[in-house]
Amino acid sequence: MFKQISATIATLLLLTGTSFAASTAGRADHSGILVWTFLGFCALIVVAQLLPALLVILGVVKSTSSATETQQATVSVKK
Image (cartoon, rainbow, N blue to C red; front, side):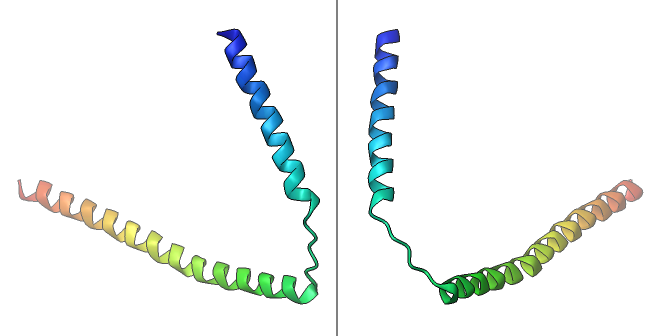
């Protein structure tokens, strides 16, 4: 059992090491300041759209929970 586990771990380490070296060796990134500015602007748009969406979702959850509490209070008063 121990031999099988150690052989599996050794194989995984050998395979991942070579694929990591192959993936980083041939890559040359020549992105200039305009590319990074554009990507930053896109990220700003995404964040600006997520904040109001999260606030709306939290408002819906809050109103749903308060409506349930009000409904439970009304039922208990009628009894």
